[in-house]
Length: 98
Image: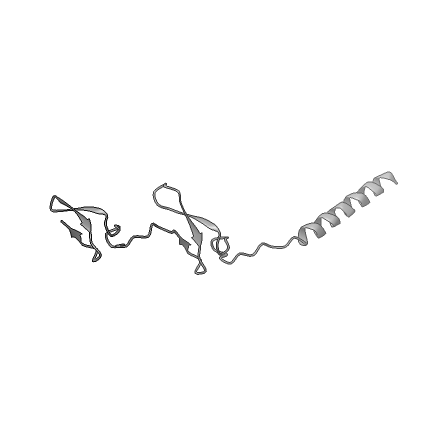
């Protein structure tokens, strides 16, 4: 009689665990391939520098870089520059004036 109660108890525990596990909600992501949501932090593979970005609505990891007045030369108006060995400053036209 005691053995049948133990088997019955084990059976009840197994049913309870099955119900508990099946009731867990699956986590859904805005970007399932990345397993991330919009606005989550992400890391860019940039040679080990650990650059942090943000997941965009296009599911891309975007990194905010520094804003430059002259992004082509990564400089700001008035920054020091050098042109043919002569020191100057960056103009409003993004040219090094000496």
